[in-house]
Length: 133
Image (cartoon, rainbow, N blue to C red; front, side):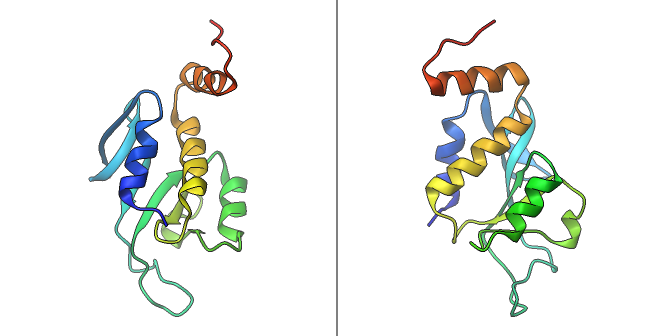
């Protein structure tokens, strides 16, 4: 499944993305706003069996409804913890998520954090149309 190298490759495909730090951790930023970062698990990041969960990243989501939908997804790729309650951030299990699914959620996170014009130009480039001024 996915690795931090996959995160780096996907981030490298997104305009105006740089590698840096977020909360002191490796992250990818768009115009100095991080949209994905590596996350060492907190003590409350445990699975149903009480085992610590390793290999997490944090992604921004559009709103709390989107976060709740992802967290309730049966795939097991996404989770949240009390630490992230009421925030627009979701944890992702890198070892479990397929790379194409990771690409989709990373692009969504990037779109949430990117400037509106940059995001609009990117979306138009996907459609093959020239961006409008």
